[in-house]
Amino acid sequence: MFENNWRALYKAAVLEIDPVKLELRVKAVEDAIRARQSLDGQVSVEERAAMREALDSLGVLKIEWKQYKK
Image 1 (cartoon, rainbow, N blue to C red):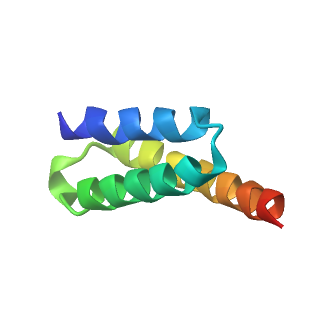
Image 2 (image 1 turned 90 degrees about the horizontal axis):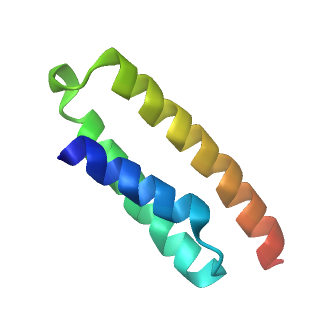
């Protein structure tokens, strides 16, 4: 269940077109991923890699959002 939670939040963030909501969605998915990462031994190697990729993508999204905001 928790695995799907961060994935659903991630999908919602990358599909968000409202800049105000985008910031909130990115924060929510980052928090969910960090909470999932804290479970350490209960998370598969594959999921850890997916979470790293998601955080990297969110980083790019945040850069783009900040440039749009200017």
